[in-house]
Structure formats: structure tokens, C-alpha cells
Length: 94
Length: 475
Image 1 (cartoon, rainbow over the protein chains, first blue to last red):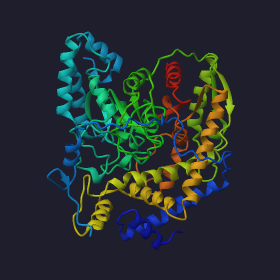
Image 2 (cartoon, rainbow over the protein chains, first blue to last red):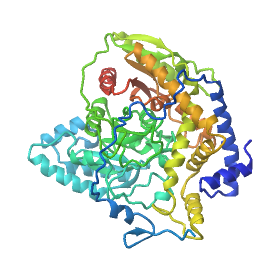
Image 3 (cartoon, helix red, strand yellow):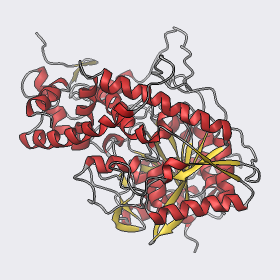
Image 4 (tube, chains in turn brown, red):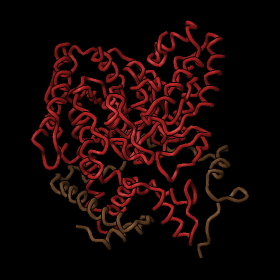
């Protein structure tokens, strides 16, 4: 069983605030799910060493490095919760 | 008078052409039905937009020159953006988010003259197979309102089945088009990875997500797919692909039946197994294909048993990265108390639902230092094996027939407390996404009034073969 401290640590890494009840439930759920993943230990190693990280069907072609005007910038900023003068406002970091 | 909402795309198009009714008539008929409905298939109704588009379509229809989708009302899954309309992905964190632009598929449909009735319910961020993970309540199955519509494209599935839309767009990361199509008794196509642009789809797991059509019959599915497929400069994974219809006959066609998919009855590990009645329906469909001249071959997908574990590592890993953007700064819900870290923690803690949190945590865990090799890297290796299994199978057969779901639609609330039991329902659909293949759910029969879908899987970019055979199986 995954410990309470482990759940809290992962939640912090994931920037998720969890209630005590949620932590307890996640301990149980994550343990069951991670146990199920043990099944993969039985899986054979692939013949080729190379791991395919992308779908084979990807076109993979890169676009030309050309600047295009986009008309959606203001709409995207508009959708953010806190903004000023065409910028998204963020709390001070330092 | 004829119920306009019962018409297929083709029939509605004929009616518009013959001036039997207008697009506004058609749209109003659907809107009326949606407003009276208690299925919870729609998260929002885009009435003003719909009527405006319908009026525009009617103008175009008057000229006599109009495409087949012109003036036909549809539903769009609420994970796909429609400019100026709310796009919530059924999450509290995006409850009031308004889409700043159209998804490419929506743009294409609008250009074809489509009428958008509203945004379809879904599991939150498309994470689920039953529709119950929606923060705004589960969609009810039109065939039995105590049961789920299947997920994650639950709203689109129920809307099409209940004549609350002529057709719909869904998205499929591990079965999210096929499962609700099977549960609701409609036709749903998950296209090949890369066949349709995902620009404007809220990302779940980017190496698997795909948008596709959900419709009343195979012909409609084909019409929609043709309208939305193709290369898009805004989605680098989309490929230059043009759908070409082909007439492929069942006679002489080689159909593969994976033996591993029918060996689940007695339960391998925690898999509850294939319902005998679902098995019978699928086997009857295979028999029907055989009688029409197809050659049925037993095939093996030796790594099938690992697919679910592989999928439920890769998907949360990708999702944990994709959902990092919902931080209380850029979109939607923002809890402003405290410092910047508090904004992240509280906005996400409050705005995201249990299944989304669960997947973010699994993904974060599997990608964290010390666990990466055992989980993520191992899952990527297994993914390669699964792809090879299919590649080998398609050397011997044209298409693969199998179930979509091991059981018909479950009761609402039946499995909500047990996430793993929910994941296990996806056993037949996830491999297709891992391998990037196209697959369709075709209504094949009913168990106690509940529809059961046959899954037809094809090789990459062989949607033409799938659709052609599905159409022959349909009658």
C-alpha cells in the first residue's frame, strides 16, 4: 500500500490540493491501480532496442519557420481570469 | 406530420433539396426535443448560433448549390471548441470558459453549412468510459434511463440515439467514441491517428486522441468523416489524407477474430469477462459475414493481456502533462488567495474532479524519478509489442471483428467506487488507440433491450474498407 506521505508528495509535485478524505481514497485507489501495473513485468522485451515514442503514422514533417499573424491572441488573453493591458496577470514570484 | 428529427443526414438533405422543410424547421424541431429531454446529453444549447446558421443555410439552399451537410443540425462534444461558446470539458475548472476560436473540425463543418445545436456531455476531460465522471452529471441512456450512455462521448452518443441531433462529433482516446456508440446503438468511427486534425480539441493524451463522427448509420458516418479528415497545418500530427470511397465486398474478405478477446470468459486476472450474450451477438455477426462469403480466420494478439496496464500508464502520464496548463492563471477557475503556489494548488484542488485527480497523480507518480523506467518506459516498450501484434495480424487479414465492450450499458452508479473495475471495461477498445488504428462500432443486436456494438478494426488509413464492410453488415 502506498503511504499517505507518498500521496502527499506526488500531489505536491502535481500541484493538487487534496483533502484528508481524498488522500485516504487516493491511497487505496492508487495502490490497486499500481498493483495492476505489475502485470507488465510478465511482458516480453521488444526485439528491437529502440523504443517508439511517437505514433508511426505521424507525418513528422516540420513546418516552415515562417511568422504568421494569428488573430486569436486577444481572445486567448480575454479567456484568462486576471488580465491587464493585453497581458495575463500573475502573482509575484520572488 | 413526419418527425424531422428521425431523418438521417442523407434523408434530411433530400428534404431540404425538395423544399419539404427548411433548415430552420429542422433546427427548431431538434431544439424543441432537446429542451424537453431529461437525458442530460447537452451541457449547453447554442440556440442563437444554431438558428443563425440555419437561416444562413436556408439562404444557401435557395441558390440550389449546397453541400450535403448544409443546414443539418449536429451536436459537438464539449471538449471540442466552438468559437464564442462555452467549452467546459465537463469540468468545474472550465465551467465558465468561453472558446476563443473554432476547432479545425468545427471550422470545416461550419464551412459545409452545419448547424450546431449545442455541446455534448462527456466524462470530465474525456476521462472515463461511462459518462459518469462529468462534473455536471451523467448522461442517461435513451434505451434505459437508469443506465449510462457510455463514455466519454456520452452526450453525443445519447443525443444521436434519442434524435436530439442528426449526428455528432466525439473524440476517442481509448474508446470514447466507440463505447457510447455501442451502448446507445449508433454508428461511431474512431479514425486513424492523424486522419483528422485535433486542433481545438482539449488535449487528454496526445499520442492517442482522435476526433471522429457519431451517426445514425454508416453512410452518415462516412459523410461526416469525409468532411472533417485531412491535413491541418495547426496539428503537426495530421497527415495528408483524402478519403476515397471504395467498394469492397464481404465475399472473399479475410476477417480476423482475435482468440485472446474471446478467452476472457473465465476471467484472466481481474477481468470480469465477456458477457455470454454479448459474445453471442458478436459471433452471430461474424457468422453473418461468413455466410456472405467472408473468410474467417482466428488470429492471435499475444500481448493483448498487457494492453490495459500499458494504456493506463501512458494515458495518465500524458494527461498529467497536458493538464498542467489548468493552473488558475490561464483559464477558467482561479482561487486567488495566498501566493502563486496557493493559486495552483487551490484552483486545481477545487476545480478538478476525482477521476482527473487520480489520473494526474498516477501520471505524476509514473513519471517521477525512480519510477520512470518501471512504468513509463516499460509501457512504451509494451506499446510497441501491441503495435507489432496488429501489424502481423494485418499481414493475414483485411479487418478484425471483435466486441466493443464486454457488457452492455451498466447501471448508473454501478462501478463508480471502483476505478479499476471501470478501466477494465475498456479492454477491447484501448489497443486500437495504442496502435493508432481506425475502428468502428456498428449496432449488432440487443441484450434485454440494450444495444451491443460490433467493433470493426482496420489497418492504418483503411477507413474506406471499414465503412464499406460496415455498410454491408448493416442491413
